[in-house]
Image 1 (cartoon, helix red, strand yellow):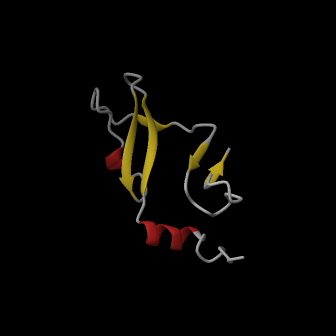
Image 2 (cartoon, helix red, strand yellow):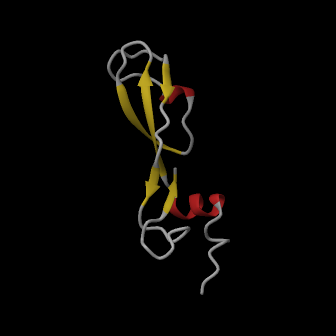
Length: 84
């Protein structure tokens, strides 16, 4: 069995994959829900509604999240990372 603890640490995973984060956002002005794709963390400049251009935007947290294809926590089923 392979020890995945070093490979699955958050910093190392990020540097190896150079991932793009997907944020679910909702505009408090017009109610538009939209996704924002960002390399790294969501910054204040990223929080702008594509519909009305308002910066009164909040992040929406979903009850479930998953990334398929990884081996960390997948239990061999191909599920990848999952939180919920």
